[in-house]
Length: 115
Ligand code: AMP
Image (cartoon, helix red, strand yellow):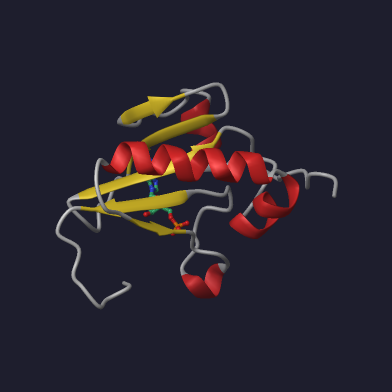
């Protein structure tokens, strides 16, 4: 499937372009990771592919499964222990930035809860 042209850059594209600052904890040729500005857990990192081609994880899985695997491997490295990986997918699930990203949550997560 051809990438959808986006109307205007998302906030994550602007972070990739260094147009706005972020607390960047990891960068490779295809991925950037930075701390969430509104953390929901002691460790809350966003792992983001640099390409703006994919709005959500289902598009990414279909279009570039290797890149999705890189995101998962990066999450594991950054969490330094057990972690939860969340991909909000669609407005109804709380997605607000339509540039695929993994939330890496770690550190003192409650057992038996998902949110
Ligand atoms: P989602 O709601 O799944 O689309 O996740 C978007 C996330 O991006 C939220 O958890 C926000 O707190 C986070 N966020 C928004 N703007 C920034 C920013 N400038 N730097 C870091 N995280 C941000």
